[in-house]
Every structure is written in C-alpha cells, then in structure tokens.
Image (cartoon, rainbow, N blue to C red; front, side, top):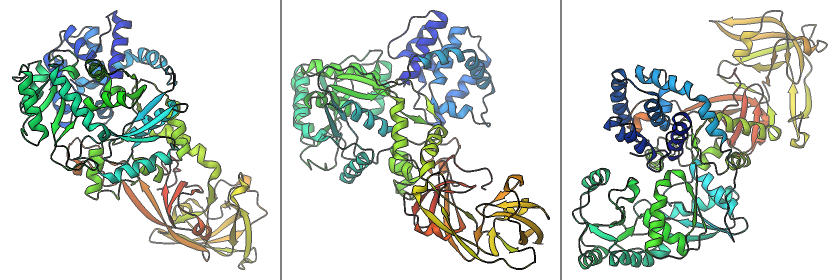
Length: 631
C-alpha cells in the first residue's frame, strides 16, 4: 500500500496519545492495520488510487462498516487511512458523496479527534532549522520533461535558501530520454531566474552515466544485483506479496553476461534489480529495479547507451559524487531513505549526504501531475504551459500572482514535514494585500445592456463639459494621474441602473451627486436614464455610489475569468474531467486611460475586482478579488 508519510505519522501520534500504542516505523499504516487485525482489503488502500479504484474501495468499506462493530483504536486506524488520502478528503466534501456509513463514521471520528489534530499541527510550525556542518551543498533535481509547477517551487526555494553560504547544484535528472526534451531545460532555468535563483552550477545525471554503469557492475560482482526478465505485472505482484524472483539467485557470471548484452541493446526483456530484501516491510527495499532498457536517443549522450539507471539508483550515487551534503526532498520519498543509504554503504561511497524531508505543497482543486497537464496542453484544452488554469509557475503568475507574494508564502511554510491541503484563498488574500498599493484604479462597465445617462442641470440644459486630472490611486500618488471627462453623456451598467429608483439621489464616483428624473424601459431592459446634477448634495448621505464612463471617451477591452482546470466528475478520463466552464470572456467599456496599461501591470476596476493586464486591452480577473456585484 502507498502511504502519505506525514499523515501516517499523525496516526502514530494519535494512537500513542489516545491508546498508548507504540509508534510504528515504515510502512506505518500497514503495520497498524495488521496489528489491529483489520480485514485484508485495507492493505489494498493507496493514496494514489484512481477515481475508480477509490470508489471500489469505498464501496467495500461502506458495506464493511454497516456490518462490523469497531473498538476505538480500530476506528482511529481506519480514520487515519481515510484522513491520509487527499482525494478522499475532497470527495467527502462534495454534496453528492453517496457513502452514508462512511460519511457518518468519518465526520464522527473527525470531530472526536479535532483536539489531537490541533495538538499535532502545533508540533511543527514550519520553521527552517536544518543543522548541517561545514559548507552546505544542495541540489535541485528537476526532470526536464515539463515546466516548473507549484510543487517544484518550494523545493527550489528551500534548496537555494539553504545554499546561500554554500553551493547550489541545478541537476537535470535526464535518466529517462522518453520524457525529456532539451527545451525544458531552458524554460526551467528561465523559471528559476524568475524566482530569483541565479547563483548555481548546472550539472546533469548523464554526466555520471559511465560511473553509474560501473557501479551497477560492482553491485553484480558483490552478489547484490541480478538480471530479471519477470514480466512487469508479475514482478509487481511478487514484490507486493514478498515473493522472490525466479532469477534472484542467478550466479554472478551469468548476471554479468546478461547485463553486458543489455548494454549492447540485447536481452530487451531484462532489467537489473538490486538484491536487498524481498520480504522487508518497507517495500522500497524489495529488490527495486535499478537499470532498464529504453529505446530512445538521449538529448546529450545520443545513442551511446541502450540502458539507463532509475532515479532511485542514480540519485544517491550522484549526490555523493557531486559532493552534496544536504539532500532536501519531499517526504513522499521517506520510505526510500533506507534504500538511499543502502546503495551508498554497499558501494562504499565516502560522502553520505544528510537527507531532510519536507512536505510537498498540496493545494485544493489543483492538478500537479505533469502527465495530466501535458495531456491538456497537447490536446489544446488549454493555450499552453502558461495557461492561467495550470499550476505551472508561469500559469500562476499569468493569473495575477505577485512573485514576491508567492515566495513569501512558500518560505513562510518553511521545511515543515506536516502534509496538509492548502486553500488557495489564503495565498490570494495575501496577494491582494501586496498588490493593492501598486494597482491603479479605473472605471469600467460591461458593454452588454449598458445604459446611457443624460445629465442635465437644474434648468434642464446639458451641462458644460469639463476635463479633470485625478490620481490613478489616491493612496499612491506615484502611480501618476489620469484624465476624466465630465459631460452630459455617460454610461452606467444595467445592473447599477436597476438599483436606482425614480427621484433617488445617488453619487457618481469621482464626480458628485445626481438625482434620477426619468428611467426609460423597453421589454424590461433600461435603455436610458435622465439625471439632474446636484453637486451641492452630500455624498455621505447617499446609499448608492456608482461607477461610470464617458460615452465619448471609452475604449473596448476584454475581461477573462478563469476557474479550476477540472470538474468534480468521478472519472479517470481526462477529457471528461476537463472543466468546460473554466474560462469566461466578456467585452467591457472602460475609460480610455486603460489603453496605456502595459502587460503584467496590476489594476483595480473599481467596485469590480483586481486584474492583471495579460496583453494590451486584455485583463485577467485575479482570484478571490471579485466583488459580489460582478456577474
């Protein structure tokens, strides 16, 4: 079973505190399940379930809960299992969640354990406090197979932060030529520069391919690796059940011969496996694959190699050879830590980096899978890797995230090992606070059903046209001024027109008070309003304060509003999972000063929300800034 390490450790904490049950080592949940003598189907649980697999598991669990009496410790283990699965947490919040027994059970136990959850969360505030002696050498090892996303950003920033007085290696993990493209190396470097990461040395896993090949031979010679042609499904089943491969005890000479043939492009059905411990409770130690055949030209080494090392094998060796002293990685790899040090010990590599685990960033309703994002890009569901619906760094910035806000938020999370699902509203709220002072204010209205207003003086004459320069933002005069034109012919929105009553006095912002004299309505739509100017009126006494644009001094522009990439359908079909309502476009009319707003500039459309200029006269609504009145 695949576990969420941090959430599993919460189960250790809960059971020790509540039931005085001794904490377990990895695999934590599996050991608790066995100790509590729960049914075998619980061992099939995985945080990586597909929607269909999770649904099947929940069906079994729902039936089981109806027909089983539970003591408190068993209930807490099952609660911990569900609590560890982000997909389940999202699912149970959906009003259509259909498993009644599970919902009742989970919510009851959640309520019972709330204080324990609070206590556990207080244990770790996310401070960065990692002790390493001497000059620190860290590495950030992205695979050049896509753009950096929000999950990578925390790792990149923490590695850079820890290496401030040492050395940061940007190591491209190019061990799988099927996935990798040279272009991705360039965009990753550009993204790192955007994050302010500029002092580093670029290295590649492929720099060490010869050494890795020789270390693989060394393991074979030590009797610690063997060639295996067991098919993938059978190998997976054997590893799950702790069954040795039929090739596990093949003699050294035969293994060396087969491995040599593999390296020449023969014996395509073979891989090389480390001979560790096929029965170990930690399944990462159950003879992992360390070399496999890949028939694809490599970007750097071209056709020199026919077989390539796996990440699990290459990572510890290259860390040691590159002089890494601190290996920061997300705690989803924690069950591989023992494997990491096994390779270093058996190969007698003197440099043994210190591993420090931290939790990955998990955001609500956010796709972090590069495979899924690539599907949507390649099939033109989105405009590219910088589409605002994607969780790539470029997509998030294009959606209006301020880079300093993003860095501030992530660094404040520190090197915490607690896994949690973060609501985006917290980040966007901080973002709004940080961009407010640098956002010029403008007036605009939807073009559709906009209403012409005729402004007259007390003698029923059109008013004299006046031009006035006012600050773009009264609280930040450094943003400069803009020109507004006050004349008898202005436009307001249909929505605002509807809230005005005959004879009502209201305020036009940046102008003064007006009185409604007449509303002209055709088929339920207001087409014109006659107003009387009353500049002597007190703006403090009016209920409604409305925005407006001058009819003769306007510019058309486009507003875009984005929603989550995927819908709530319970399906593994990515096309069906795509949220077809994730992008909305609308034409608005705004003051002509908007024409001078350049891309990547923040603005506020008054009484509407904050926006970022995507391109001239195209503005993207920044999440969680929309005011209620905007449709």
